Length: 80
Image 1 (cartoon, rainbow, N blue to C red):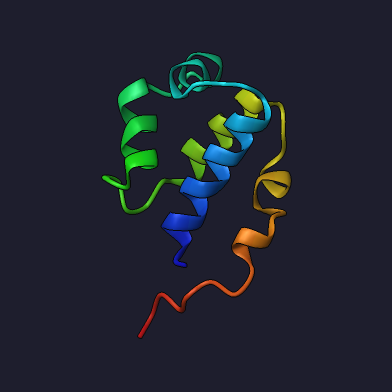
Image 2: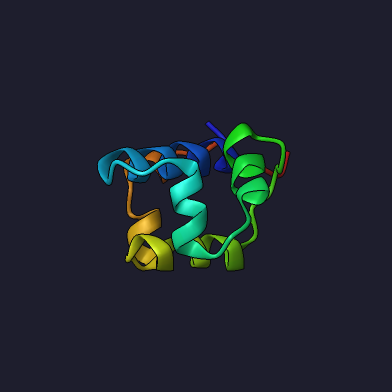
């Protein structure tokens, strides 16, 4: 799994835990729905850390909490 796939899965996981739709996440985080959709669909390869921070703020978690998941263990090497 690469970092983009892990970010997508983590967002989906956090939304499911909180019974949130992507639209609801967009509303509570202040990130446009199109941006959140692009991240979750994989259209945007690299979600910026500022965007992830806004999503975390909306979810009421820290960036540390976001990345504190087994999804981010043993990621594929990005530089080959």
